[in-house]
Amino acid sequence: MKLAILLIFFFIGPGVISQDEASMVEIYAKVASEVPSTRGSLIPPATCVTNCLNNTYCILAYMDTEGYCLNYNYSDFNTTFEIVTTLNTDGFSVAVKINKVTCPKSYTELEFTYVDSRNDVNYPFQWTKTETGWTLLNPCPEPGKIFRRSETVVVCLQIYSLTGKIQSEASAFCESQGKKMSGIANANEKSVLTNGPAGTMWVDGTTTCQSKCKAADYTFTDGYTNTTEMDPNQNGQVRAYCLTIGAGSFWVQDCSNTDSIGVVCGSRLP
Image (cartoon, rainbow, N blue to C red; front, top):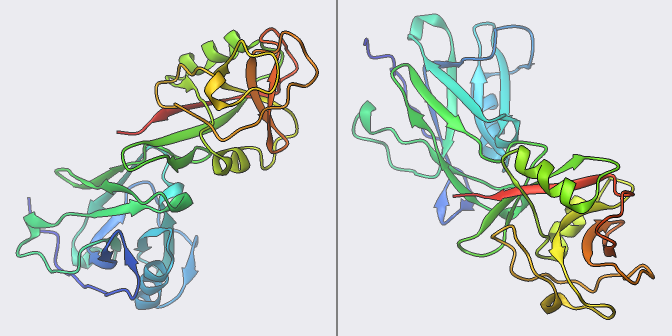
């Protein structure tokens, strides 16, 4: 294969991310899914790259043959994203944000690694080299929300609209999506997930406690929720043993209740 990487520039950023300063590596390449068009901004290439560098969430700047600039956030990538190497005469260039500031010795040593900074998680990711360029897999694309629970536990949670279902049916729905009905571990997760939907959503967590239930009274089956910061509202029900969230609060409901409007499904990231 003809060597297509003809240009490497480093733009050293002022901020520190994951104890490494951010850099932009510019190469002759194009975004595989992006047809050159008038989408984007007509600005100088250097400005296009600098704008991405200065944006915490931007990880890639793309300049097409017509001079249009497109900046991509990590959350913009749905599952797999690909960049394809080109020749300098083709007129395309891509600048990838990385967390290293030293220039590689050779083309084969290029490693594009950075972090997903949504919700201050700083979850590391790395582009995978292919025969034609690089691909990037986003394990938690929007509308999924990424959360760090500890140094070793990072989860991706997503709300699914699901009406008229009891708790066990909501759990089965998550399984059908290749996920688990997920517990809510802290106030931040609860706040982010209840910011918008009007109504309650099933979440993992059951109890036999009848009143004044605390976190220790609940059991979880998702495999990554061990405790919660909660003081659930019993909602006046006697046989209310299953957790839901809504309106910024936890609510304990009868497990056969069908009033919930959705369910929180998720998975633990590797």
